[in-house]
Image 1 (cartoon, rainbow, N blue to C red):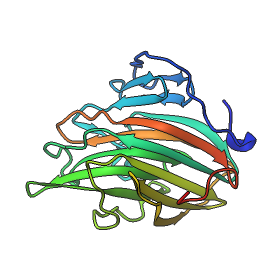
Image 2: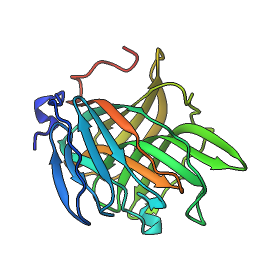
Image 3: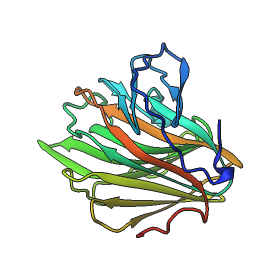
Length: 234
């Protein structure tokens, strides 16, 4: 697996297959990383430069504090300081909630992991409550299995009709989140700090806590060494 030490900008080969792994199995998705499918019912469909993940209901989560870590994801190793960026599209329309302690939720985006207990999520997200669906950028840190702060819809509301780009910038133990939508400039969502090793795992994920199946599509994935990517806003 190639890391960002060589300032790599990933080039995704033309490919159109579906991968449906068994529980706990993992397979390579060329240009993206290793497909991790703990629940055994996720789907990974690369097509040219795009990748669609499928997370059926009722629960495909990335919440260590709830012992829910079965969301499909595709990860690769990244070393040192780096920037990772991806475009996220799809239908974000969760149905009824399937967890008592959480609202109905769809989220898709970037995942940076030390391990299954310490990791950072930046997602284009939506939740449904009181008959309304809220769309926003969700930025959360789990540290030693505990959620440090739940993301709020007021943190950064999003237009659901627009494609969304997500970006994480790692500098040592500090990770900065930035978000932009079509024709817009990068907006900074904030920083999260955690003790991180030199090499972490980064990639994309799809989280579903609702009765409606979720199929987000990713494209334009870039993982580059710090200083080699375009400055935010350019």
